[in-house]
Length: 453
Image (cartoon, one colour):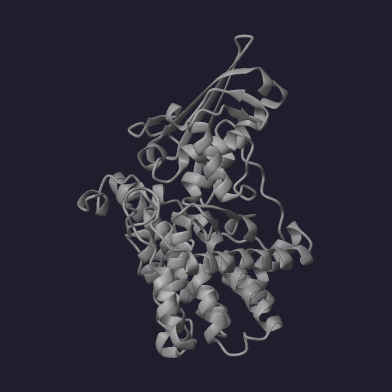
């Protein structure tokens, strides 16, 4: 175990961590493999397989690959400039491999192979180039969820040593008992083994700033989302209703504020804007919206210093729970269905909020278990292959579930019949049993029962 909080929460672009962020990183990694030989490339071929091919166009995969081949990263690319650059390439501009070498290649040249499933993961990409001397270079990459990528044929790097490794909820609770420490502190001690304490703090606050900026952008951006479904942004209208006449944050409106914050993030994500994986883009609205709610409704968090400390505790707790899903199952919708994305995010947010509410480690673990237990079996069936229906509303519903899960856990003593480890294993088994058409392929569920126009 050496999954960092900054692996779980990474700043990128929408609409999908596995179908946009991962492919951009893979394409950039492939170009880096070429080194100086990039200037000798005369032809490029890219093949997408499985889920990447089935819903890639709706998830922006082809454009993300072009930007990655030009050397762009999800963290640094300007979303608007990126969209404009892809349009220019498709309009006749040459693709600049590594940002320097022109070759003829557009999104239309990317081959889609949805029926071909590779052995390691359904989100597979094959990159190939021909050189002017008749040579070739080929590589297969997998986008395994949350923006994480794996290069076929390369041994995975040994995890960095951390002082308090854990891969199960039971191990995490034992560490909490052994060191008389909350979950966030266990995670923080491990993070400090990877980078200085000051960087952990500043990095987490930077992550929160990006999350809060995404909420703010989504509250004010009007219009129709791209993709052809004519889905109109609803967050700005709800925000106007909540603030009409100088309205504030009355408790009677608390669920509406959860809804509007989650929808704002996921509408930004659907538009290809700047978002933070949490732990994926498709579930990116849940963790920030619950913290957005906490800042406004929990006492004392209007003081900047206390708010910052709460944000750090919340994100570290949520990340500790995310580690368990990465270690014991998957956060990939293409492997687990939406239970692996929205379900894990709900679990993470519930745990983080339980920590802020003063929960013991066992109450926090109980909150996380409640959060996933009531998302088990959730399918991933995006209409039109777009991260819009049912994804935007689903994040809002899960954010409400997360708050409810945390509150229910705090009414108990942390002793409960179903452990988080058991619930995660159930999710894993359910995902393995789930038919492929319900796992981010848009071949079943709402995707085939709702007309696209």
